[in-house]
Length: 229
Image (cartoon, rainbow, N blue to C red; front, side, top):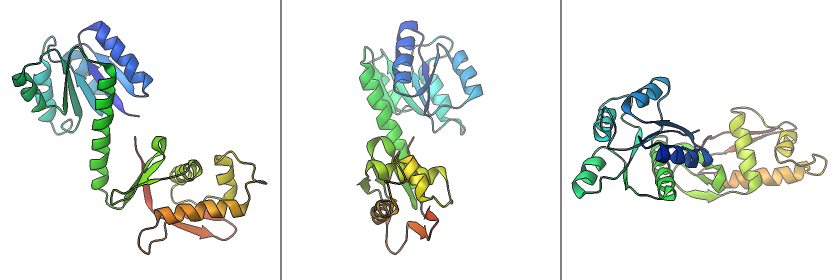
């Protein structure tokens, strides 16, 4: 689960922001100062920090600069959410952060910015693993190593996740029927074979066989697939 720290000294904005983030399924924690942020950082490193500029003890720009200058935290995504709206402030902020949103703002804009940054970050990670496929379950898409996005059906989505949950293992037809919430006596072997065949064709690149069949046993995924966060 994506972990986000929201650093804001206005209690109303902080609490509302945390509610929006948690409703979107993020693991969200709040801090009102650099001291509270440091306590959170001592426990876990976040994927993304939403940062106000005018904070007690240390301002947001200084915090962002320090995070960027430390190897352990330099890759954390940073979004400034601040009332400072001059062009000089924006340029200074974007010199350290990945996005800059001025107050007052709509939380929908903030959530859209978060999704865009996380998507961009995930794409960069996949580029570093050229032989890896990326499954996006909520969008019913799978991206090939050469960044081609393919639509998949609901059952294909389920089967791929089943393979991921059992790496390097043979998945039986009964396991597939149960994962698809089908009665095995109805969801027979021929229908499962058709499902696997269609999925195999989508995942096939060159002469590589992405799904291997084992007589009377089941199927094994032969390619590397990761789930998008």
